[in-house]
Length: 307
Ligand code: ADP
Image 1 (spheres, helix red, strand yellow):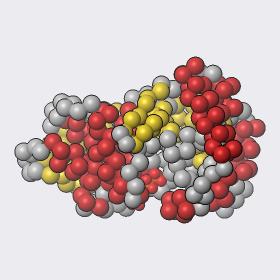
Image 2: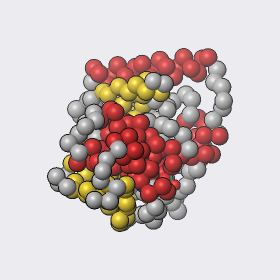
Image 3: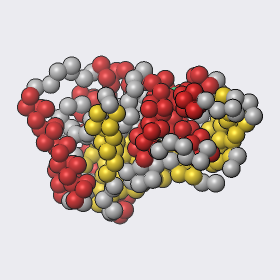
Protein backbone atom coordinates (compact mmCIF):
# COMPACT_ATOMS: atom_id res chain seq x y z
CA UNK A 1 0.00 0.00 0.00
CA UNK A 2 1.51 3.33 -1.08
CA UNK A 3 -1.41 5.67 -0.49
CA UNK A 4 -4.23 6.02 2.01
CA UNK A 5 -7.31 8.25 2.23
CA UNK A 6 -8.66 8.83 5.73
CA UNK A 7 -11.51 10.54 7.58
CA UNK A 8 -10.20 12.71 10.44
CA UNK A 9 -13.05 13.28 12.92
CA UNK A 10 -14.00 16.40 14.83
CA UNK A 11 -14.13 16.04 18.62
CA UNK A 12 -15.79 17.66 21.62
CA UNK A 13 -13.45 18.26 24.58
CA UNK A 14 -14.17 19.72 28.01
CA UNK A 15 -17.43 17.81 28.32
CA UNK A 16 -19.03 19.90 31.12
CA UNK A 17 -17.92 18.27 34.42
CA UNK A 18 -15.18 16.56 32.35
CA UNK A 19 -13.44 19.93 31.90
CA UNK A 20 -9.88 19.25 30.66
CA UNK A 21 -10.20 15.45 31.10
CA UNK A 22 -13.10 14.13 29.00
CA UNK A 23 -13.73 14.30 25.26
CA UNK A 24 -15.72 12.47 22.58
CA UNK A 25 -15.29 11.65 18.90
CA UNK A 26 -17.90 12.76 16.34
CA UNK A 27 -19.03 10.52 13.49
CA UNK A 28 -20.31 12.82 10.77
CA UNK A 29 -18.09 15.90 11.05
CA UNK A 30 -14.46 15.74 9.97
CA UNK A 31 -11.72 16.44 7.44
CA UNK A 32 -10.24 14.15 4.82
CA UNK A 33 -6.56 13.54 4.28
CA UNK A 34 -4.59 11.67 1.63
CA UNK A 35 -1.14 10.40 2.56
CA UNK A 36 1.26 8.80 0.09
CA UNK A 37 4.73 7.32 0.43
CA UNK A 38 7.54 9.22 -1.25
CA UNK A 39 11.18 8.38 -1.95
CA UNK A 40 12.25 11.63 -0.35
CA UNK A 41 12.73 11.49 3.42
CA UNK A 42 10.58 13.71 5.66
CA UNK A 43 7.10 15.08 5.13
CA UNK A 44 5.70 17.51 2.57
CA UNK A 45 2.24 19.05 2.56
CA UNK A 46 1.37 19.29 -1.13
CA UNK A 47 -2.20 20.60 -1.04
CA UNK A 48 -4.68 22.09 1.45
CA UNK A 49 -8.28 22.80 0.50
CA UNK A 50 -11.09 24.31 2.58
CA UNK A 51 -8.91 26.50 4.81
CA UNK A 52 -6.12 29.01 4.61
CA UNK A 53 -3.44 27.12 6.52
CA UNK A 54 0.35 27.02 6.09
CA UNK A 55 1.90 24.42 3.78
CA UNK A 56 5.20 24.62 5.67
CA UNK A 57 5.70 21.39 7.62
CA UNK A 58 6.87 23.14 10.78
CA UNK A 59 3.92 25.59 10.82
CA UNK A 60 1.15 23.09 10.21
CA UNK A 61 -0.16 20.86 12.99
CA UNK A 62 -0.19 17.87 10.61
CA UNK A 63 3.44 18.51 9.64
CA UNK A 64 4.64 18.81 13.24
CA UNK A 65 2.74 15.72 14.46
CA UNK A 66 3.83 13.70 11.42
CA UNK A 67 7.49 14.70 11.80
CA UNK A 68 7.41 13.77 15.51
CA UNK A 69 6.34 10.27 14.48
CA UNK A 70 8.86 10.06 11.59
CA UNK A 71 11.73 11.12 13.87
CA UNK A 72 10.77 8.29 16.22
CA UNK A 73 10.53 5.71 13.40
CA UNK A 74 13.71 6.77 11.54
CA UNK A 75 12.65 5.60 8.03
CA UNK A 76 14.57 5.62 4.73
CA UNK A 77 11.65 7.20 2.88
CA UNK A 78 9.06 9.92 3.52
CA UNK A 79 5.47 10.99 2.87
CA UNK A 80 3.37 13.58 1.04
CA UNK A 81 0.08 14.71 2.46
CA UNK A 82 -3.03 16.47 1.18
CA UNK A 83 -5.38 18.02 3.74
CA UNK A 84 -9.01 18.67 2.85
CA UNK A 85 -10.46 20.72 5.72
CA UNK A 86 -14.14 20.67 6.56
CA UNK A 87 -13.77 21.62 10.25
CA UNK A 88 -13.27 25.35 10.65
CA UNK A 89 -10.14 26.33 12.64
CA UNK A 90 -10.97 27.92 15.99
CA UNK A 91 -14.49 26.47 16.08
CA UNK A 92 -13.92 24.54 19.31
CA UNK A 93 -14.49 21.11 17.78
CA UNK A 94 -10.89 20.04 17.39
CA UNK A 95 -9.83 21.32 13.97
CA UNK A 96 -6.12 21.10 14.74
CA UNK A 97 -6.57 17.76 16.54
CA UNK A 98 -8.21 16.21 13.47
CA UNK A 99 -5.07 16.96 11.42
CA UNK A 100 -2.69 15.85 14.18
CA UNK A 101 -4.58 12.60 14.74
CA UNK A 102 -5.12 11.92 11.03
CA UNK A 103 -1.49 12.18 10.02
CA UNK A 104 -0.15 9.83 12.71
CA UNK A 105 -2.86 7.20 12.18
CA UNK A 106 -2.50 7.45 8.38
CA UNK A 107 1.31 7.02 8.39
CA UNK A 108 1.05 4.16 10.89
CA UNK A 109 -1.53 2.40 8.65
CA UNK A 110 0.69 2.82 5.57
CA UNK A 111 3.53 1.17 7.49
CA UNK A 112 1.36 -1.81 8.51
CA UNK A 113 0.60 -0.49 12.03
CA UNK A 114 3.95 -0.86 13.86
CA UNK A 115 2.48 1.14 16.76
CA UNK A 116 -0.78 0.66 18.68
CA UNK A 117 -3.20 3.57 18.32
CA UNK A 118 -2.67 4.54 21.97
CA UNK A 119 1.07 4.86 21.31
CA UNK A 120 0.36 7.47 18.61
CA UNK A 121 -1.21 9.96 21.03
CA UNK A 122 2.03 11.63 22.24
CA UNK A 123 3.07 12.37 18.62
CA UNK A 124 -0.30 13.95 17.86
CA UNK A 125 0.07 16.00 21.06
CA UNK A 126 3.19 17.59 19.53
CA UNK A 127 0.89 19.00 16.86
CA UNK A 128 -1.52 20.30 19.50
CA UNK A 129 1.41 22.05 21.16
CA UNK A 130 1.98 24.00 17.96
CA UNK A 131 -1.69 25.08 17.81
CA UNK A 132 -2.21 25.98 21.47
CA UNK A 133 1.14 26.12 23.26
CA UNK A 134 0.17 23.25 25.57
CA UNK A 135 0.35 19.46 25.40
CA UNK A 136 -3.22 18.27 25.73
CA UNK A 137 -4.83 14.99 24.71
CA UNK A 138 -8.55 15.59 25.21
CA UNK A 139 -9.12 16.19 21.47
CA UNK A 140 -6.41 14.03 19.86
CA UNK A 141 -7.07 10.96 22.03
CA UNK A 142 -10.79 10.71 21.10
CA UNK A 143 -9.91 11.51 17.45
CA UNK A 144 -7.40 8.62 17.40
CA UNK A 145 -9.26 6.05 19.53
CA UNK A 146 -12.94 7.01 19.11
CA UNK A 147 -15.68 6.92 21.73
CA UNK A 148 -15.50 8.87 24.97
CA UNK A 149 -11.97 9.32 26.33
CA UNK A 150 -11.06 10.08 29.92
CA UNK A 151 -7.53 11.47 30.30
CA UNK A 152 -6.84 10.07 33.77
CA UNK A 153 -3.24 11.28 33.92
CA UNK A 154 -0.63 13.08 31.82
CA UNK A 155 2.43 11.94 33.73
CA UNK A 156 2.46 9.12 32.81
CA UNK A 157 -0.12 9.50 30.04
CA UNK A 158 -3.10 7.24 30.75
CA UNK A 159 -6.28 7.46 28.70
CA UNK A 160 -9.37 5.33 29.19
CA UNK A 161 -11.83 4.65 26.37
CA UNK A 162 -15.53 4.27 27.12
CA UNK A 163 -17.90 3.14 24.36
CA UNK A 164 -20.82 5.42 23.68
CA UNK A 165 -24.32 4.42 24.84
CA UNK A 166 -26.02 3.32 21.61
CA UNK A 167 -28.84 5.88 21.45
CA UNK A 168 -26.69 8.88 22.28
CA UNK A 169 -26.55 11.75 19.75
CA UNK A 170 -24.63 15.00 19.78
CA UNK A 171 -25.96 18.34 18.52
CA UNK A 172 -23.41 21.08 17.84
CA UNK A 173 -23.99 24.73 17.04
CA UNK A 174 -21.00 26.78 15.91
CA UNK A 175 -21.76 30.50 16.17
CA UNK A 176 -19.32 32.34 13.90
CA UNK A 177 -17.59 34.43 16.53
CA UNK A 178 -14.00 34.27 17.74
CA UNK A 179 -13.15 33.04 21.22
CA UNK A 180 -9.41 33.28 21.86
CA UNK A 181 -8.21 30.12 23.63
CA UNK A 182 -5.80 32.30 25.63
CA UNK A 183 -8.70 34.45 26.89
CA UNK A 184 -10.82 31.37 27.65
CA UNK A 185 -7.88 30.18 29.80
CA UNK A 186 -7.10 33.47 31.53
CA UNK A 187 -10.75 34.10 32.46
CA UNK A 188 -10.72 31.05 34.76
CA UNK A 189 -9.92 31.40 38.47
CA UNK A 190 -6.59 29.86 39.49
CA UNK A 191 -8.16 28.21 42.53
CA UNK A 192 -11.63 26.85 43.20
CA UNK A 193 -13.46 26.41 46.52
CA UNK A 194 -13.55 22.88 47.95
CA UNK A 195 -17.36 22.88 47.64
CA UNK A 196 -17.10 23.52 43.87
CA UNK A 197 -14.49 20.77 43.48
CA UNK A 198 -16.75 18.28 45.30
CA UNK A 199 -19.67 19.17 43.03
CA UNK A 200 -17.48 18.70 39.96
CA UNK A 201 -16.00 15.31 40.85
CA UNK A 202 -19.38 14.02 42.03
CA UNK A 203 -20.79 14.88 38.62
CA UNK A 204 -17.81 13.46 36.72
CA UNK A 205 -18.13 10.16 38.60
CA UNK A 206 -21.85 10.17 37.76
CA UNK A 207 -21.18 10.89 34.09
CA UNK A 208 -18.63 8.06 33.77
CA UNK A 209 -20.97 5.67 35.56
CA UNK A 210 -23.88 6.76 33.34
CA UNK A 211 -21.80 6.06 30.21
CA UNK A 212 -20.91 2.52 31.33
CA UNK A 213 -24.45 1.66 32.45
CA UNK A 214 -26.22 3.53 29.60
CA UNK A 215 -28.25 5.36 32.26
CA UNK A 216 -29.47 8.40 30.32
CA UNK A 217 -31.12 9.96 33.38
CA UNK A 218 -27.85 9.84 35.30
CA UNK A 219 -26.00 11.28 32.29
CA UNK A 220 -28.46 14.18 32.24
CA UNK A 221 -28.14 14.90 35.97
CA UNK A 222 -24.35 14.74 35.79
CA UNK A 223 -23.73 16.94 32.73
CA UNK A 224 -22.97 20.10 34.69
CA UNK A 225 -19.85 22.20 34.90
CA UNK A 226 -19.28 24.19 38.08
CA UNK A 227 -15.67 25.09 37.20
CA UNK A 228 -15.29 26.61 33.71
CA UNK A 229 -18.74 27.24 32.24
CA UNK A 230 -19.83 29.95 34.74
CA UNK A 231 -16.90 32.09 33.49
CA UNK A 232 -16.49 31.00 29.87
CA UNK A 233 -20.18 31.33 28.97
CA UNK A 234 -19.70 35.12 29.11
CA UNK A 235 -17.50 34.86 26.00
CA UNK A 236 -20.33 33.28 23.96
CA UNK A 237 -23.30 35.55 23.12
CA UNK A 238 -26.69 33.88 23.72
CA UNK A 239 -25.15 30.95 25.62
CA UNK A 240 -27.77 31.00 28.40
CA UNK A 241 -30.64 31.16 25.89
CA UNK A 242 -29.10 28.37 23.82
CA UNK A 243 -28.68 26.10 26.84
CA UNK A 244 -32.21 26.85 28.07
CA UNK A 245 -33.59 26.01 24.62
CA UNK A 246 -31.62 22.74 24.40
CA UNK A 247 -32.81 21.57 27.81
CA UNK A 248 -36.42 22.61 27.11
CA UNK A 249 -36.26 20.58 23.90
CA UNK A 250 -35.27 17.49 25.86
CA UNK A 251 -31.45 17.47 25.68
CA UNK A 252 -29.80 15.46 28.47
CA UNK A 253 -27.26 18.23 28.93
CA UNK A 254 -25.63 21.14 27.16
CA UNK A 255 -22.32 22.96 27.52
CA UNK A 256 -19.37 24.60 25.81
CA UNK A 257 -17.41 22.49 23.31
CA UNK A 258 -13.67 22.85 23.87
CA UNK A 259 -13.04 26.47 24.76
CA UNK A 260 -15.90 27.55 22.51
CA UNK A 261 -17.51 29.16 20.66
CA UNK A 262 -19.27 25.91 19.68
CA UNK A 263 -21.96 24.66 22.04
CA UNK A 264 -22.75 20.94 22.32
CA UNK A 265 -25.81 19.10 23.60
CA UNK A 266 -26.28 15.36 24.18
CA UNK A 267 -29.64 13.72 23.49
CA UNK A 268 -31.21 10.29 23.60
CA UNK A 269 -32.28 9.43 20.05
CA UNK A 270 -31.89 11.14 16.68
CA UNK A 271 -35.35 12.73 16.72
CA UNK A 272 -34.58 14.49 19.99
CA UNK A 273 -31.16 15.64 18.78
CA UNK A 274 -32.81 17.18 15.67
CA UNK A 275 -35.38 19.01 17.82
CA UNK A 276 -32.54 20.38 19.92
CA UNK A 277 -30.80 21.53 16.70
CA UNK A 278 -33.97 23.33 15.55
CA UNK A 279 -34.28 25.10 18.90
CA UNK A 280 -30.63 26.21 18.82
CA UNK A 281 -31.06 27.56 15.28
CA UNK A 282 -34.05 29.65 16.45
CA UNK A 283 -31.92 31.25 19.18
CA UNK A 284 -29.18 32.42 16.78
CA UNK A 285 -31.41 33.25 13.82
CA UNK A 286 -32.71 36.18 15.90
CA UNK A 287 -29.18 37.60 16.04
CA UNK A 288 -26.70 38.93 13.49
CA UNK A 289 -24.42 35.98 14.21
CA UNK A 290 -24.12 33.37 11.48
CA UNK A 291 -23.81 29.73 12.53
CA UNK A 292 -23.48 26.07 11.49
CA UNK A 293 -25.46 23.27 13.11
CA UNK A 294 -24.56 19.57 13.11
CA UNK A 295 -26.13 16.40 14.48
CA UNK A 296 -23.88 13.36 14.87
CA UNK A 297 -23.53 10.06 16.67
CA UNK A 298 -20.43 9.40 18.72
CA UNK A 299 -17.88 7.58 16.52
CA UNK A 300 -16.47 4.54 18.29
CA UNK A 301 -13.59 4.09 15.81
CA UNK A 302 -11.66 7.37 15.64
CA UNK A 303 -9.75 8.12 12.41
CA UNK A 304 -11.23 5.91 9.67
CA UNK A 305 -9.58 4.51 6.55
CA UNK A 306 -11.68 5.43 3.51
CA UNK A 307 -9.52 4.00 0.69
P1 ADP B 1 -10.32 24.18 17.48
O1 ADP B 1 -10.75 25.39 18.28
O2 ADP B 1 -11.35 23.75 16.49
O3 ADP B 1 -9.86 23.06 18.36
P2 ADP B 1 -7.70 24.87 17.27
O4 ADP B 1 -7.75 26.11 18.09
O5 ADP B 1 -7.26 23.60 17.90
O6 ADP B 1 -9.10 24.63 16.62
O7 ADP B 1 -6.67 25.06 16.08
C1 ADP B 1 -6.66 26.11 15.26
C2 ADP B 1 -5.24 26.72 15.16
O8 ADP B 1 -4.27 25.79 14.68
C3 ADP B 1 -5.27 27.86 14.17
O9 ADP B 1 -4.42 28.88 14.66
C4 ADP B 1 -4.68 27.26 12.91
O10 ADP B 1 -4.07 28.21 12.08
C5 ADP B 1 -3.65 26.28 13.46
N1 ADP B 1 -3.36 25.15 12.54
C6 ADP B 1 -2.17 24.79 12.03
N2 ADP B 1 -2.28 23.70 11.26
C7 ADP B 1 -3.57 23.34 11.27
C8 ADP B 1 -4.30 22.28 10.66
N3 ADP B 1 -3.72 21.38 9.86
N4 ADP B 1 -5.61 22.22 10.90
C9 ADP B 1 -6.21 23.13 11.70
N5 ADP B 1 -5.59 24.15 12.31
C10 ADP B 1 -4.26 24.26 12.10
